[in-house]
Length: 345
Image: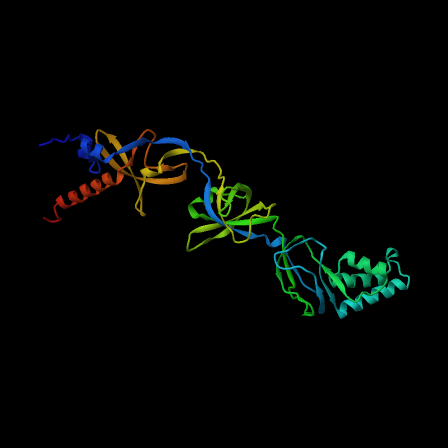
């Protein structure tokens, strides 16, 4: 029969497991030393492109009007700020314009601080007329039958609800225009990685429609609440979109350059057995002896995990076939429990 050496410390430490050299060779057990390392790895997450609400404008009226004509613009078209979108007639607008023209004909001068002229001009401004439109009425000294309503900003028309001959009530959204030159990417970052992310960090965004293109942005905001179902935190990344390639609701892969941490004792991630209730590594004591050791984990990165408690520098931990050794350790502990006599016998 084969003899297995019994060591003094093994007899004292019931958790130590001895594995024969032949079994070690067959199972391919490997170990690596515990070392000080600086863990820094990018945080990766899935994201989705969204539009910046501050770059979105709704074209609506502050008075009741009738749409005389809508220009040849449709959803998806790009418009410039000041470009006419529609021509309309509004009784309240015509009344305010007539008052303004009457004051001008009376020889009033706004530069002399005439309150009546200032009031007539302010009334037009309160109805939503631009300075350019008011100046055009002043030059013509006449009330236009219809008035051209301009686009408030550059951007694409995302919604069009205006049609020829329709009646528009105050507040009705006739157009919605979105500027795509800067967009958001909303990424869902794992709860365990959120401590590595901070506003101002750079982020690389690769849309899945263009995997060979990388867009550079920055972290603008970390939302204050977690998603209870996925245990992720939403991170908002702002980035330029000069070519208009990034479209709303487009999926993207996000990589955030996390801050570099301080050095810490670390082991390969493959060396850790996570049971859910605790985390364990297998120490290689040499000469075929192994010992499970409960540890406290810290940061992760570059394929390594920080060990905050449970091991020391220079200890060797098993990185492969560790489940076999752990199983033998559990079996040894179970058999020892069976060998113990019951209380009172």
